[in-house]
Structures are given as C-alpha cells and as structure tokens.
Image 1: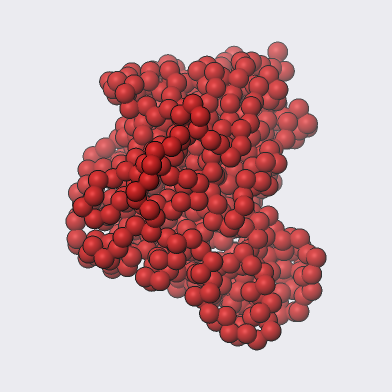
Image 2 (image 1 turned 90 degrees about the vertical axis):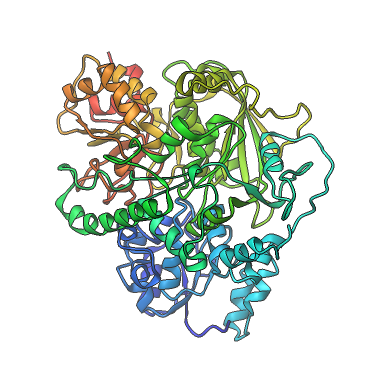
Length: 639
C-alpha cells in the first residue's frame, strides 16, 4: 500500500476534525484522540436499516461524529487511512461498521487498541489494521508498505485466515479437509477456570478426530464447537448473502440449533415513534425483515417474532429462557450475547462473516481470553442492584483502561463468583454478564450457583447439576477483584459511554424528561418488579414521558398477571409489546428535542437512542424514582 489519499485523525477537538474534512493541513502532534470511537458512530442504527453493502453504507461512515461530520464527507474527502485512539470499535458486533469504512474508501485503520469484535470483523473480512503508528510514518515518507507485513504481526490463526483470503474461503478449505488446527492438539490436562474448561472441551482437533483438548491457555486461538447460534433482522440478510456467495445452498450444520429473531424492528411502526424516524427507517427495515423471513423458510431456521412460529422477544432474553445450557458455546450476531453467560455458558457476540462460518461448519474461532475473577460478597441493601454493580465494575480504571491488555489481540472475560451471587435470580444476574461487553470484555460467565439450577428446573424442567462447569480449586486467573457490596454505591453512567461511572449521589440535580425501562438489560420481570415497587402509589412528574417494554412475551405475560403493566399505565406510562427498539432508536422512547433521558438500557453513545440528547444509564428503581421527581433520584429519598 502506498499513501495516495489523505489521513483522517479522529481527535477530540471538533474544530480540528472539521478542518481535516475541509482539506486543511492540521497539526495533530500531541492531540487527544477520541476514546472508544464506537460502532454507532461509525455507522448509525438508522443507516444500518438501509442495507449492508459498501456502496450503500460508505456515505454514512462517521455521520454526526463530534456533531461535525455530514453524510458523504469522509467518502468525498479522499481519505485512505483513519487513525483512532484506544478502544476503537467499541459497541455493537455489526460488521457493517467495517463495511462502512471500506465503502468510504478507507484502506487501513490505525488505532492504539481495538475492541475484540471489531478487530475480528476486520480480520475475517480482510480489512488491514495495525496498532503500530510507525506504519503511518512509513506511509507518509512514501514507503510502499505491504499488507502482508501487517498480517505477520497477527497470531497464527488470524494469519492463516488472512493468507486464505478471509474466514469463509478458509472455511471452504477446512470442509474439504485441507486445513489442520494451527494449535497443538496433544496436550496434557492442567487446572483450568470455567472459561478455559468450556473452550478446551469444545475445541476442534482436526478432521475425523473427537473434539477436546487437555487444556487451553490465554492467547491460544482455537476453533470451538458451537451449540446455539442466532441472528436478527439487522444481520440475517448479510449473513445469508455471505453464506450463499461462498457455499450456495449447501446445508447448514445442525439448523435445529439456529434461530432468527424479529426483535430490533418490531416497534418502529408504533404510534409513539416520530414520523420522521418512520419515514427513514420503516420501509428499508421491513425489507431486511423480509430477507430474514425468506432465509428462515429456505433453510429450516426457526423464527421468533410476532405472529411467527416461535414466541417474540429480545433475542438475548429468549436464549436464556429457551436455549442456553451450562457448558455451551453460544454465539449470536449481537454484542449483548454475553447475556447467556448467566447460565454458566460461554456466550459471545460475533460478526456476520463469523456467523456464516459457524452456520456452515458448526465451529467458531475464539481467542482464549484472560480471565478476571470477581468475587462478590455482602448483601445488596439500600436498593443496590446488579445494574449498579456492573456499572461500578466496568467503570473501574482496571477495566476502563484495559489494564489487563498486554498485546493487541488480547481478550478478557469476567468470571463472576462468590456468596453474594445467591441473593439474585437469573434475571438479575444476567445484567452482569450482559454488560461485560460494555467494559471492553469478550463476555462474562457465572459460576454454578443455586439461582441457575432453580431457573432451569422451574423454567424448563431440567436438572443441570451434572452439566455445571466449576473452576478447578487451583485454577489461575489474570487478576482477582473482591467486591463487598456494602462498598458499592448506587451507580449511574453519564452520557457518552457505559464506562462513565459516577455515584448517583453526585448527580441529583440533573433534570430528567424521558424515562425508558426496556431492553435485554432492563426489561426482565425482575426489572419490571423493581420499577413497579417504586411507582406504587405515585404518579409521573409533570412533563416526564415513561416507556416500558417487556423483554419477551413470557415476561409480558407474567408481568401482566401480576398487575405490573396496568400499574405502569396507571401512572401515565406507555407500555409496548416486547422488543428492543428503544435501545437503538427503533421504537418508543426516542428522545425529543431538548430532553434528557434516564434509561435502563446498556448503551448510551451519542444518538444511540435515535436522536441527540444526553442519556444516563440507571437501574430500574432509579429510573422509576426519576420519573416520579423529574430529576435523577435515589429511590430511598422518596417519602
């Protein structure tokens, strides 16, 4: 590669950023690069409804970034290289974020560090990247830098994928018996933690050999056997398009373990959604939905959604209700797939290329992560919830600054353990695993505890005690954190990033106009109960809007039977059908002009919820209290 175009530096200063777009030479020496340039900023949820090709998405690359980039600016500007800071690619698993780079003319991404899913998507789709800023210096000096030299910096599996032209051509050779594991398969047993045990047991060892390794270690890159695989409307069309281009109508591996979910678009047509949003999103979103339905019919994939063959709900909640099991490897084309880690499973989000690979081969690549053990002790008193705990954890400098990272391709997970787990049910514990991705982590996994056993027994009639995966007593961890719940305050995340933690007590003067209780993180039965307990006998503050969205049909049924939905309506709230539209600007709860939002969702990037306006992440109880007073409020302060 020779530098024939321009370099776009994603710096914090919007004036400097705009000057680059206007063709002005800008001195960026010493400039602060934006932390956590996220996939919503790279390609918005609105643009994602339009399609999944570079020609469609390229003009929308970085639209509204720092409120200075307009549609088409980057593509028209002749930029060839983009340079970012730490945690580049934070957020969604949407592979269209990579496609948008390519469609805008970007040929190389340079950043101080990359988030795991985004980095994998670049590898699997053939997008060159590096964390070595010296490469930029070489390019600016006129050197022709071969992309192969960047591939040589990668671990063996990534190298092999790159040399084969991407993950899907690699998969074709694997299916033909031409590929051997890039890792040693004859390994002795050694003590392992939960993550290592699951990945070792499920590891592929080569054609005609049984799965399973004696051990794995952090940094190993292995192919592992999947159990459940899932997609939704944003991603299924792209997944099947990639699949068919590589394999035509070849059969999928165990399609009975695959499902698609109509959950992201089901609320776009709601009366409470602004007409301007419907005008842009509704028609193309229905086209993507139609592609998903056709793919399910053609391939025998079960489909969840309103009026479909299987019950509707947010995919992550339904996986916990109906599919996930201890010891499973679970993947979906959504970053919040770690939700199912609450069942003592290894669940993580992947991009569209990786899912196409998994659908055909039954395998998924996994970089064995470093594991941080979080020991939870004490009692959750004073209204403390798992949402407070996870916001407190991912905002800790250890996770926010990725102090666990030693190389560009390192990954990390949290193993949740300790006696404090048993006081919460699976609904509540799933908030912990769901939001690990917001801390830049691959996933979270909960050690065996009574709530898991009780949930699977009562919900699905299963006795899973023999399937539970325990850490070995002498297992090793990269780091151990011990958290006494008595020392965790009621916690919020301030606008811009879920890692922007702050004690609620320091933000009691913040006016709130829009309250959303919803999503795979904040719409479970436990969440609705917590909010209802605060609302009883009270009404909304004047001028406050409340939207409540149960996370599944089962949650809605149980909440309705308990009178919770009628209670929310009685206080003046809007109760919708199950779905996850509010979280991504596809449903009721989109901020109106000038509004400040308090939301139980898991992500508060700029414009993430479909419109400008600050979004504070809070627990369901704090959301309810804030709706009653019109300010961020500690529920304990209500008389």
